[in-house]
Image (cartoon, rainbow, N blue to C red; front, side, top):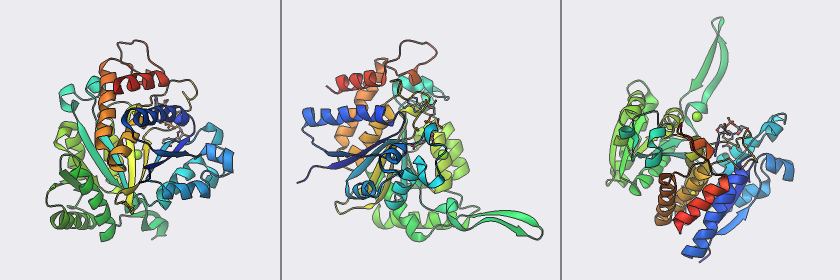
Length: 365
Ligand code: NAI
Ligand code: MG
């Protein structure tokens, strides 16, 4: 059988720096765990503009469609701010998401014990937190028609339309239920069925899919405003939160900040199942290219390493290896190893990007 394939797109700014540490982890898995990956690498964003004259070359797009998973660093930077809209680095990222039809965006909020005091909430509220937000990414109010600014009765009116078809709800609901099966088997579906018809349909379809295909999963429903309250009051009540594009945008940022630094946050975007039964997938840290610290060895590589751990779990069925990496990170943080972004008021000496990589590899050993 062919080795699992991975396309690495380091991108711009700190992207290549954090990706270098992931490559060391991949090397470790090969050497110490006998897990060989078929890794290829290409350019995206500003780096692709320099290499190919476009933010994502057709040849790179074709590779992304063919591999088991894509791992992306970050794109963008002040250097590219004056480029035409179609050539901007973000267009490369958007093209990948659109053409791979990545409709389920996964944002975990996981609290590492050593960082619990970093949270704006009390330690007890967040210690041990492990939730996963599944946000529908390709439809809803950001895309629905009619949209625009029109003139009506002598004044202007701004219109956006929340629109979901049954099949769009079905496919993202299946993603959430599949993910819940690998976790605590609990899904909370979030909408505003009390005031929105699209929410009524959402609730009905999600319930039907659960009853017909996932009777082993516990399903609850919650209004989005209540969910926002519950996330800051008692976030540990959740396992998987399934929601639409707009509510997911807001709730995922809210949940992420329960656990601290941008340098710690991974994400995944999943699409339809491929021939091997696993979803088409792209993994990337939540943060951007951080031009303010690029090239200085200050970037925290953990968000990208955790994104790779998600790939192990969801694209390669190597959940035990993902847990191994997460446990190593937990240990390193418990030992007090910190990049600059994780330094608390007590101070200390931060490690560099590769220093953090060294510590994680040592903990894996
Ligand atoms: P950013 O996430 O790049 O940086 C925000 C702040 O967090 C900066 O102070 C940065 O130094 C810090 N930071 C981010 N990641 C870090 C890490 N791993 N370790 C330590 N510190 C870290 O967001 P910003 O500044 O708004 O955008 C910078 C560039 O990145 C822009 O060109 C923007 O368009 C692009 N961007 C790209 C994204 C992507 O590729 N998915 C997402 C967000 C922004
Ligand atoms: Mg947002």
